[in-house]
Image 1 (cartoon, rainbow, N blue to C red):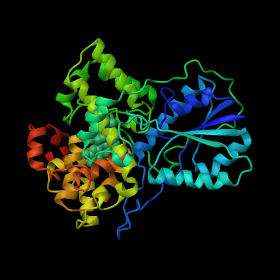
Image 2 (image 1 turned 90 degrees about the horizontal axis):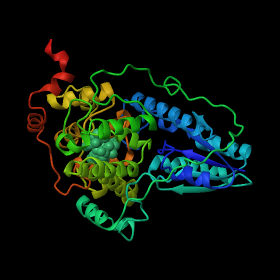
Image 3 (image 1 turned 90 degrees about the vertical axis):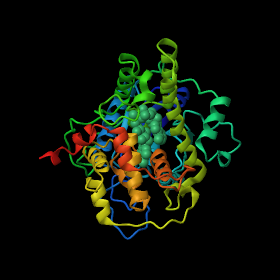
Image 4 (image 1 turned 180 degrees about the vertical axis):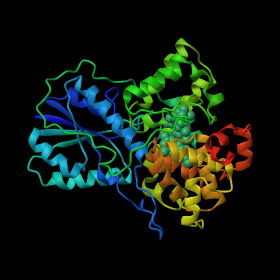
Length: 442
Ligand code: FAD
C-alpha cells in the first residue's frame, strides 16, 4: 500500500500539505512529477483567432527553471527516503500503471482550478474510472497566503472586485496559518524503477547561455529560493527599503525577485510571510517590510479573481465582459516582441524579456499598456506571449494583471500609461534603456 504525491506547482518539501498529509498516512510515500507535453507544444491558447502565434506555451527559460527545481526537489525528498519519479508524459498515461504497480490507495495533490490543470485531471479521471481499485484524490489549496477556508467572505462569489476592500477585510479578520514540515519523517527507500529528467532538447526547446545583464540571475529550486530570501532579507537587509526601491529597473536587488520560485511553489507565500514577521521582530519593522506582504496579498487576490470568475479570465471581454474592439496584427506582434516599436522604453523592456525571461513590474505595466491600450491589440495575445516567455509565469497573476492593465479586469480607473512620462520618471538618466538598446549606440 502506498501514497502518491503528485507534485505540480508545489515543488518544495517544507510547508507542503500534500506531502505532509501523505507522510502522516499509512503506507510508503512516492512522489511524481510530469513534464506534461500539453504544456510544451504549440498552442492557440484557446484564442480562436485567425492568427498563428509564433510561440508555444512554455519557453526555454521557464522550462530550464523547472528542470532545476525538480532536480532539487528530488534530492531533498531522497534525504527522507522518498523517491521522485519524473516523466515526460501525461499523468493520464502514467498514473494508472503506477497505481497498479505500487498499490496506491491515495493521490495527494495541490488543488488547481484553471483550464489546463482541470483538463489534466479530467483526462486522468477517465483513466482511473477504468481501474478496478480506484485511489482517493486528496486535494489541498496550498498556494495561498490566506487560506480559502479562512477568508471572511461567505462564498467566492462574494469576494470584492476591488482589491482594497478584499485586502482590508482579510488583514483585519484573519491570521496566516502556521507552517508544516516533514522534518521527522524517514522511510525505507521503496523499490521503484529509475526515471530521468528530460533535457531542454527532449522538451523541444533550444539550449541557451544566460545574459549577464539580467536583473534576475536565477537558478531553479527551493534551495535557491531560500538563498535568495536570505540574501534579500538577512544578508543585505534590503527588505527594509523594499517599498522605496520596488519600481527599479536595473540590478538584482530593487525587488525581492521571489516570483519565479513562488509561481512553481519552491517556496510558499506563508513561508515568506513568517520570515517577514521574524525580520520585523529581529531587525526592523516599517512601511517597506509591510509592503512585501501587501504585494503577496495582490498575488492572493488574483487567485481569488480566477476562483470567482473561472474561465472568464481567458475571455476577450475579461471578467467585466467588456465589448471593446480589439485588433490582431502579426506585424504589430513581431515589432512588440522584438522591441522594434516607436517607444524606446517599451523596446528596452521587451528586449530584456526576450533575452532573459524577466521583466520588472514597472516594465510589465508599460509594455502591456502599450500593447492593449495604445495599439488596441487583443490583450490575450500579449498575455499569451508572457505565458510563453516569463520565468515566473503564474496563470492567475498573469491573466489578472493583463486584464487589469487592459481595462477588462479589476482596475476601476481604466488607465492608459503615458509611456514617455513613465520612462522619464523611472529611467530618468536612461541607464536602463542604454543597457538593453546598446546596439543602437553604434
Ligand atoms: P516583488 O515586488 O518583490 O513582490 C513580491 C511578490 O509579490 C512577487 O514575487 C509576487 O509574487 C507578488 N506580486 C508583486 N506584484 C504583484 C502583482 N502586480 N500581481 C500579483 N502578484 C504580485 N507576476 C507573477 O508572479 N507571474 C506572472 O505571470 C505575472 N505576470 C504579470 C503580467 C503583467 C502584465 C503585470 C503588469 C504583472 C505581472 N506579474 C506577474 C506581477 C509582477 O510584475 C511580478 O510578480 C513581479 O514583478 C515579480 O518581481 P518580484 O518577485 O521582485 O516582486
